[in-house]
Image (cartoon, rainbow, N blue to C red):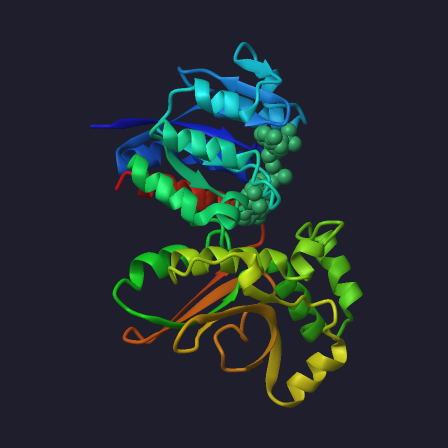
Length: 343
Ligand SMILES: NC(=O)c1ccc[n+]([C@@H]2O[C@H](COP(=O)([O-])OP(=O)(O)OC[C@H]3O[C@@H](n4cnc5c(N)ncnc54)[C@H](OP(=O)(O)O)[C@@H]3O)[C@@H](O)[C@H]2O)c1
């Protein structure tokens, strides 16, 4: 028998809109393969919200966003100025999906919505890293107390199952070292510099032209995006209560073409790595450019790749790599989380 699952979505940008697009295309296959039908009953963006218990039309909402209009402009169901939190509080649903912008000062607008949803007994799926980086312990405890699921597999390297692999598939084994390329932009920049023998400024321009680096690339190139993701891995996979203050963070701005050439002369490559290393008493956590042997699984990553390596005590060394050119795999990871809540 088919189960209907209602969800509300905050954020209708790259991730939210592509999630709706995937759903619009795969709705029937999902119903057939998983026995569930996902019904969008509320959606919020910066214009307000659209709410309809009978379900919003995905194509219509996507068309509105592509026409640069907001959820508030949705015919009949649009509510200009209604906040994401007001929508969450007034819309009965089984799942909240948080695809709002990552805010590392307050976690808002996601934080309040996530708290409210769990208090109402709803599962939460997040692409937004902010609330997790700021309040991981509080949110996982709140989910436990409320008996709901909290899933965030898309927050660390999008479609790459970094969190799931670590949390689920390494069960029972100890992790001695994690090495991750968690930020696509910095790997793109260093890979292009090394392969095309170009300087940092030119490679950064290429990343901006490809739409993967912001006009202000600080969060990526200074290492903070990767650091946020390492905080999530440390808390979830390594079970180490961790905040950004526990990490040593170095960016890639100072890596020169000469550095890359010197590395190559020694048979090595420089990669932007997030590392957690067990020193016998604690994990040492860092983000920065690292010289790797050519044979290292992360040394072979191309400019569109991200990856992770788990060194374990009893399960050997497991690595995974994803080729991820845009935001769609993260949207697919959100869908994966939603379906896995019901398996
Ligand atoms: N892009 C990626 O590849 C990627 C990968 C992993 C994780 N993430 C995370 O996923 C989240 C979404 O990313 P994105 O690329 O989709 O961002 P985005 O394109 O900037 O979209 C953000 C969306 O949030 C809406 N929004 C802004 N303020 C809001 C508010 N106060 N209340 C409700 N909605 C609000 C925006 O509204 P308007 O449409 O009206 O502007 C927009 O629809 C972020 O937290 C990001 O860090 C992104």
